[in-house]
Image (tube, rainbow, N blue to C red):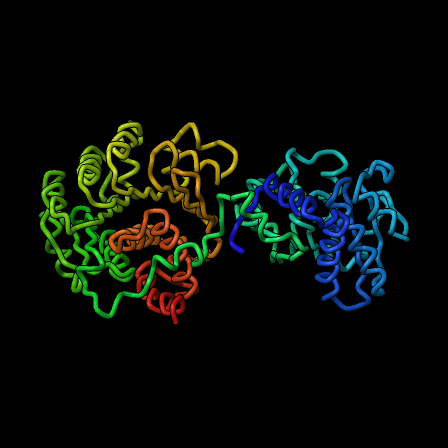
Length: 490
């Protein structure tokens, strides 16, 4: 169940389920019951305040309130707006509620143990203001646990953005499939624990909807990441090259190279400028070392077709020399990962990089953080929605784009996208991004397709961070990979 549905796609899933014979009221009843079941994990005497909005999200709240009252919970309910303006399934659900329907200002939130936020769901598309915004602020100021229906009110289901103000929930109950707003920041951090409820929408509706976004999970790429064959050898698993910076900036390349080797590349070579050969040689064992003088040297090295993936950018320095190295790599037949200084060196001439990518057939993966993204795609940097920004940049560049952060988005030029939600905060440490670039490069060397290599690399990076735990440093991440990989297959 890794598919992510936009609010529009979720509305279509509802429509298709209803057209196939499941009444909308039944879907609403099941949704409200799922919310009630989560609330009912609290002791029976817990006071519950249900805050309903004027649409179907409010209808779910009416159902949850009725079921909780039938189970013996003390329930009070308030409606934002007039009851006579409710329509369709929500109006029918409200008609079955036998308690009082209070105005929001009359609802005592201070005495509640649990607040059910059934104001607005994932389809909200405008900022909250006036009475709605004031009610959200009251909910957040209360000491009760908050359980959100579908998505915390004020969070965009499409982008995760806060629309004016938003509820801060301890738990969120959503239905059929998660939405991008559940995993994109800041919405992800306002949802608390997300529970996914089955309300009877048939799985076959997904074929008609054809969603293009998923969670980044092993189901997306595990088949491509098979164990090495018992009859194979290291040359079957590809040869990755990582380009080193000068003598005083060599560590980033070695981090990336070790990650590429741990990711399963059969061989890994560090391509080193002459002044850095000694320092690199002093630190490398299983990883090989080759002398490389500038862009011409890299081009000569990559003329060997056995060297089928190259990673460059970490600690290379920003400038024309690095830009020339990137262009040399892009002119070769190897798959290319461009990170860090390899991206920033084109800040003044981003089209130069995009043109070089467009001229080749072999895969390219770009791994910017938000600042690097803004330098390459300044017109997209402030566009709403991280998911759509990444997709637009991937389509423009022809590369797979990894837009890094706590909610890393992996986007392919054809519109496919995955969102990672497994990265611990501990990954925000020096060298962590170098390891990620190396992981992706190692997987490309193993001949994974670019989108799958990027998605697998991002997920493995997050899981390695979780395995290494609090206090991790970048050097710990490659060493945690064997445990993570073993868990995938054992």
